Image 1: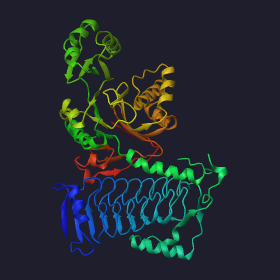
Image 2 (image 1 turned 90 degrees about the horizontal axis):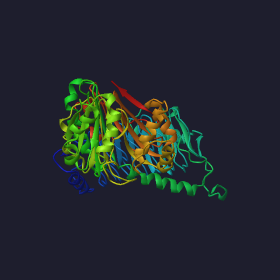
Image 3 (image 1 turned 45 degrees about the vertical axis):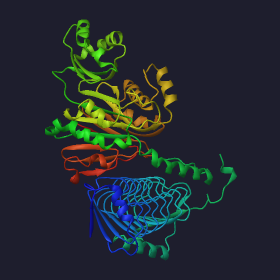
Length: 225
Length: 326
């Protein structure tokens, strides 16, 4: 286990040290002490390493992640796991706005609540939120799965394309062109797999599925301003 | 809610998402901190705690900084905080000059470019007009029984040490670090803004209808000094309250009448309130323990508060007015 203390070291040094790890590294387990809400912690990782952050982080932690597993033992500021490509990011507390935005792959697990714009423009990432999510979540979501074990705020899935949105609790309102969809056996299977990976024991049968009504797919000249 | 017209086309939506993602940058501009003490024994530390919180927010707002601090005045005297760019000339004989005109009792405490006048409540209006006559360059930062406002251009750490904020005690306070977007970097463009006796406002965001609202308020006789958007927000709240609204009601109606992005933190004699616009792009984190309620634009601002590890930490909901009172 390698330990890096942000109370004595610098963020830049920490991130360059983590960036220097490659697929053959022997230093696979890292612990970061005293994050104290600093920005961009463990950003841009690209190696099969496990990073544990002992506390809460500020903006853009674990952004652009590839291969690595990042576990934040606190809450995360805006833009956590933004544009993730692969790997896994787990937040033990809450996540601020646009968690997992534009993510292409990998799994983001938020054990508390997520704020507004969770999964905005998601492009293949899987996001599992144990609690609730805020307004405008999955706006223009293109692909991937958003699983919400609690409730969703206003305008869920506005203008979404083909992402699957699963909500167990209530949905305050659906965004434009988002509708409830039939839950078929393949969806239950996808959901069960994600819930297991996210260490949630809620039942997939308790969820509803939402997705695109596909009315906005083609440009309609009558809709132009 | 955020109304994307369901009939609008996908192209328009593409532009919308670009705009929303670009707000990522804007949401890192300006910092707000606030601390409301429940535990009276912490009052001597208020200034030191706020100073630390304020300096943490320097990279959100290096242009100017300000602080509003509430502490009980002497023997029921009112306070008027004033500012001058030439404090030596303006403040030297001011106490005597004013006492001659208002017939005694007034005290003056100079703090760098600012000074606090301590006077009877019924002398405030008269003193204001005399100041305008005998010291036309002196500007009034705040009036009230408990409130003092200090603000200047410069890095937060310099502003805080200029006024020795760390040595101040009080029951609650609000600070702001500004990254200017809507108007010039000046003392009067710095926050907090005094919105009425013992009331102040700080703002993170940008109001997009401030020009039309300023014209409307000026037509109604409201005095607005600068081209700053937040001053319009402050004047709007004052105008609403003069019309009979409570501060809570004025904040509720601001959600209707103000267009743009904002997180407002308001201070009153007894407490403070927080409201975010419905889109809630501007960040806000709250922390509460048995000893205090704290506000920060980021969690970073709160990390050195005592007992923060065990505090209840959350983000205020959009379009919801929060209040804490003594």
